Image 1 (spheres, rainbow, N blue to C red):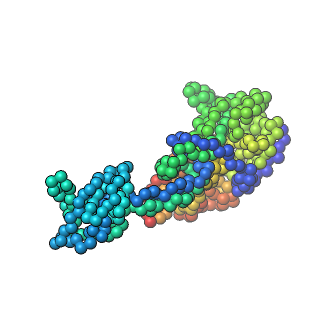
Image 2: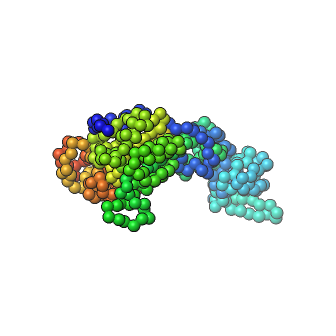
Image 3: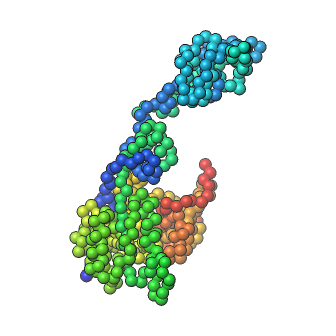
Length: 421
């Protein structure tokens, strides 16, 4: 087919995507299964923490007034009348001249208004009675955690859109969220195209390469919080491709094909979009690598035609598909973060299109330094191994010199170095 392919700018392509991206549905999931999911409700303190006045120290609960006047020269004796371990409550009303042995976390006995540490008293046994001697005055409130001191009831501890991790799970458990409302994980289908592709377990043959894009995409999809489903290698036959994609769309809401997005004799993506009746958002972007990236919608379903070149496929997913999936899972931040960095080498390859170079950034003191991770060609996959950023070179830039400040996009990868503040 004859198709007009006019390249649009990257920011315009992203804007078109965001305008069509939608939140996914909400479901309730048992707390232990929510790690990595996105909250679809605010985490609200259902009660104060602590919800009773409790001891913050191992020692003795006393009445502060009973300790007044105590000194090394004039000790005051208090009779020990009860023992309160954590999790239990004393039934005694503390009277003048009395003390109650108490453990950290235990509820303060009625009548007590201070705790003195066990190492600051002298314990004495008189027959069957236990006493303590105090040699200092104890202020009211010493070593007591009061109701709501940590968190007041009604406080919003985390807003919806927050990814649940260890801290959020601890607080959800604290406030009794045994079931948690989270956004459903979208299901994403992956096809790769090309009769030149071999399965990973097959031996190499002349003219053939192993399929690597699908495994790369499965990892990228999982990192967004979505669930991938690999459908295999599509044959270079239009009717068979159409049947397979139509069937896959009954099982998933997002579908990726990698390869078949260019203009070769067996590149069917544009014809498939036409036959599906999908609305094409764009079919060419002013970028390198991945200019032939195509995105279309079919009602609430999405079709992403990514380049078959590994690095172009990777970049296309991060820039265009990642925000759509992040929006669907309700994430607070859908775009990868950006910052400035000092480049460690010259870049002299001008291009009218914006370039996204696989790069590695390191933090040293207060500065960020970045350098390319390898050969800047879309078919080169080895440069992805060390890459934790994409180095952005705006279209039309003639050259960049070592130590120039450049823009980088941080990938979801570990960062080496230490920040000193």
